[in-house]
Length: 339
Length: 288
Image (cartoon, rainbow over all chains, first blue to last red; front, top):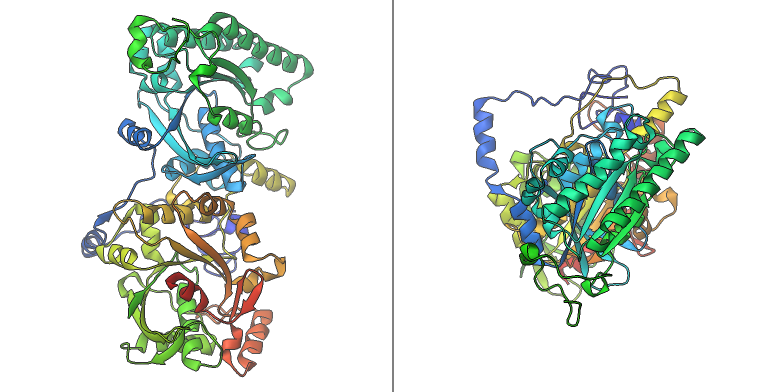
């Protein structure tokens, strides 16, 4: 059910917004119009005069906008990293969707400066997109980094928890594996409290792709480390996405994909465990394409990890950073820490 | 003493109907109210009288035009016998739609919003837009034998935003530059309450279940709003609308209302389990 009139909610209510019988409505059944009605030059002039106060935008924040949030209050910055189609947009969108249904565990929504960005991210998993399967738009190569903002209230703490989610094209991040100097511009990774690496379940199910999926994760992390944008205080979340596809796969493929993910986690722990404060793994289905798992499955666990109170003194195996990266880590070592 | 509040809400959220019923209620003086009518000396009452007449006749209010926004004034007396002149804007919901979707407003609206002492925020309880997932709609369509065709994609636009996102964003916008309003009291008016009353929820329960993002936002105190939520039925039934005949059931319900000897009996205000006809109560709270 669709209607050319964007104000009409016939797809939800079954009723015409104009109160007409559906077979009488001239707009019913047509794709929603995105073209503005033609206006005369006089009307345009009147509109231009009418609205002269600009209000706060609600799109993705750029670096200046994110910096303002960081300066205003303590903020968790989450860098979400993954190859193209690994589910970054789905994960970010699912946060907005979940809070629109209620609290996420003991975490409640408090504020967002980027509602338009979240809503746009959600769009392609919603019926209003007219799609017949959920699909996410990808962040395009070279479009730089953008940030989504949420302020949350964690049940047990009196202060609001500000969170910024950094979004950059998967190809940008992959370029660090080709040349670690490319990572120098990844300011969001350098500042991140948690680096979240997405491993696509769909890729692990593909017998031809699975080896590259596994190796990509290792190489991207290696590129970031060699590029000097990671630190010992950062935590890492390894997130298996599109779990619904794995759950509905046949037994052999499913077991192999799960084994592959376990192998990735083990390799990252073995290779890079001493270079981060903590490495944790998660499995999610942020925007399932099937009914096997609920919308946003597993996202609550990742969110709790992201905003958990964290002190560098909790870091395991704390070591001094290499001198060339010292500027990005000032003030993080506790007195008495190994030197 | 001059006092003013802001009435806010997206198109067809019940703002003008509330004003119409309010003007009838206080001028009829048949029911006890927190704020009472004093005189007609506040200014020209043509607009308010016109609204109240349509309301008494059982006719739907004409949609407020963005070019004919009105400021209306009422001379009232409060519970302490203090006289006050209440100024209320009857603004088109279109103004708020533009604020949300286009991120801009007129200087006159900005001035009205910042000079108020509190906010009456209207949400039509029976027209809450909730997003539906592709996966759910596709499953329903397939079950009905009418699968959604491939290849269709509608681009995103702010017009598609769910009701609670729009409302939360509007409240946030009021607290941010350049508006930065000083007041922090908001009365959430869930209008057309008669349409959802059968669901058996209190307005607070309704807010939590049907508008959970808004409830979380208010409860978080992120922007320090002091808030109340009211269920308000200012009409009591569907009113007649030009070129849109009512069904026989709607017609019968409207006839019942018209048969009431006192039109104020049509009004129901629900707050924390108590019921009255006092549409001035939320306003009195905002100004207290």
